[in-house]
Length: 101
Image (cartoon, rainbow, N blue to C red; front, side):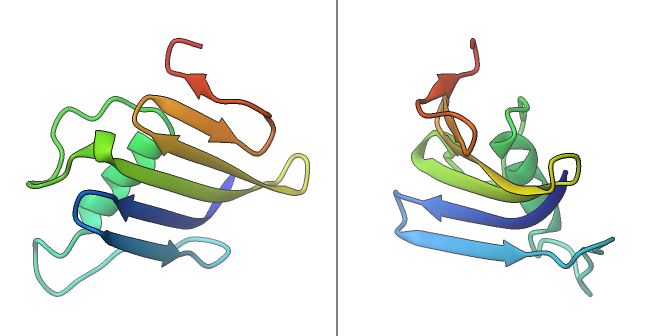
């Protein structure tokens, strides 16, 4: 799977962020700390279902929607995963699934 884009919507604060990635390796760099590199990676992991122990200050992941657009090299198809709280929606499924599924 190749990550193409991450969309993060913060419903409580009325903010969103869209991050697009080029094909191949991408580097996340900034001249200073606290610019959001780790937060972006945590959003990616959380969106894919991993358990994140510590979120950035002010983040309420249960109040956010995260959509990850990917390219599946095996099937040569674009796919996506959307996470809102404990519900997941995927491009390959017609309903929602939970972490327990």
